[in-house]
Structure formats: C-alpha cells, structure tokens
Image 1: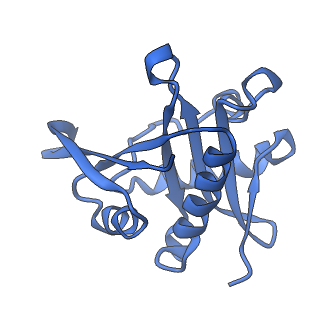
Image 2: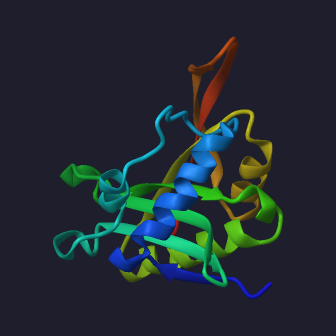
Length: 167
C-alpha cells in the first residue's frame, strides 16, 4: 500500500481530468451524473490559485502515476461561516476499502488544522453505506438529513449532512 497523497497543482490537471471523467462514466450511485463528463476548465477550478491558497484544497491519491482518489475542500464564504468548510471525495472503485479514503481524510484534516479551521462538513448520499461508515470511523457525526433531495431514475435518496469539530 504505497499510496502517495499530495496537494494537486496545475501539473496534475490532465491526470485529474482523466480520473474524474472515468468516474463519471461509471455512473456510480452516490456521484452526481454529468452526461458529458467534466471539462478541464471545471477541473482547474478545483485547484487553488494563489489568492485562495488558505481557503481551498485539492488533494489527490496516487498509485505510481495513476490518480486513484481526489478530495476537494472549500472554506465557506460568509463571515459567520468562515471557521468551517466542506469537502467532496472520490476513490477509484478498484481501491475501495484499501485505506485510500482514510489517507485523504487524514491529510485534509492536517491541512485544515494548519489553516485554523474549526469544523469540517460534508454531504453524502444515504445509500453510500461504505462512505458513511468511513466518515463515522474517522469521527464525523450525522448532523441532519435532507429528505428526498436526490432523484436518480426512479429512486429517491436522502442527503445526509455530517460534520466534525477539529478545533
């Protein structure tokens, strides 16, 4: 398990773009559909620029040169909320239950503490049991539920709100 977790930069743009389009192509439950994938311009928006360096994070997990996971985190913009932010994370299905998600969470939490965040929040589909279990195992607690927020085909799912105080 020699995975590398690193902060993504512009030089990782093509690899992240390929990884995300691969994931969207799988049409997995728990990931919003993008019929035409994601553009490089949209991926570039995930990468922090110099003025947002303390407000935004994009981590990637690598196995050799291959991107096998991605986590994006953004600080909330309103003054009363700036102590917190939220994240989204994905892991390549071939690496599920191999510790990649936990490594991404650990690195994000270190970065958040370094940048004086007090709270980390996330949203997760109610049917994504493995992700919910991973977040719970890492200290995230259920803070609410948006009933019926997701409709995919004929299925309706709740959106669970989870959070963790780190400061």
